[in-house]
Length: 75
Image (cartoon, rainbow, N blue to C red; front, side):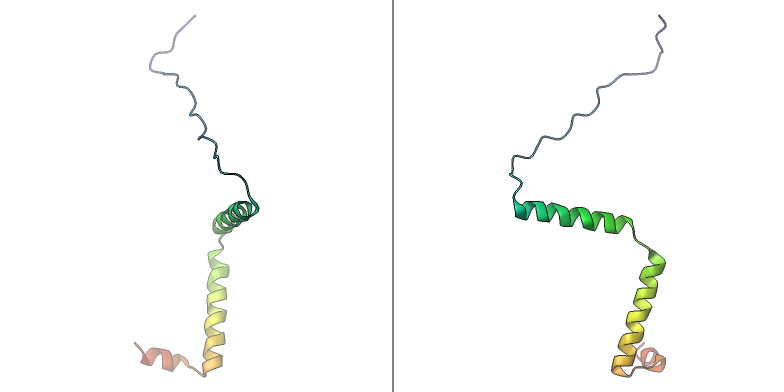
């Protein structure tokens, strides 16, 4: 049997210890919210975010009667 030099065999990392905290309704809801936030962050769409920001700015400008000149005057 041939041995390959330069390779080491290591044990796979052991899983983290299990939490002892019981899974209550509030803890479950917290975990669910965190998971949702994680997946939402990974599914970001920068172009859609840009369009949403533009729409919000336009809405605010209309609400307060602002113009582009008003914005430039504040620089």
